[in-house]
Length: 275
Image (cartoon, rainbow, N blue to C red; front, top):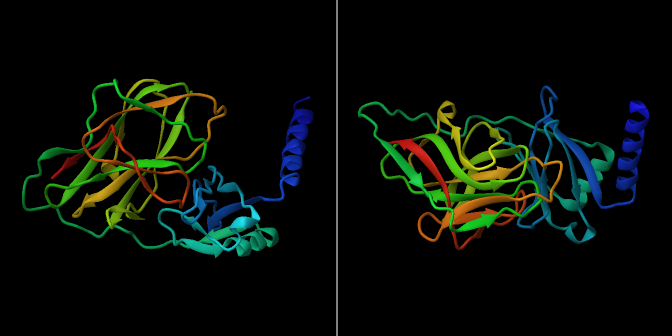
């Protein structure tokens, strides 16, 4: 009976794909050892069309003909990105559904913190009140929101990230933490050299992510975000954060590779640092 159910589910999935000619599937892998790359980002640049691969490197993305002349980017922390015209990308997937990415060298330079005693500090928004809240309502993988962190002393060593959940109706949530340099006061390129992924089952309260192992040493202002990378089984549940009207402003984007938008709030997200 279990085998029969599995066959029926698979058949239903293939039928759904066949009925949608704009749905394209593929796998992102390492160009050398051909291992899959979990949670790679796939999206049309500056458009709200994008997704994130699953933990096996597999992805599905809907690409209608109206985007054929736009550029699509595939990226993974620690790897060289690839960019295609959407029309070209479709043809490639029809011939070979595997996209290979090549490793690149470390993004963060080696910086010494010797010579003076570092002091504890906090960057970002510490919001203790739950009187002002915002609901996380998107179902798009790759949705990101974060803040610009203005350093006070050089170098600044990032030790942990914290944000508060007012209410979560999910059994568990999986996010990725991304650090970007800035260009024209907007997030530019990711600067952490390895993925930072965490899972939480917290329903209400503070989430603290230990970042001490990632050697995050900053000498300039930067942007830090939390990215939604894995779909829950159900999408009709709530996830609510707190915010304030004062502090480090929040920026968000709807999908992988889409434009960043400034939000009129200050999300309750902060970093513990030594500087």
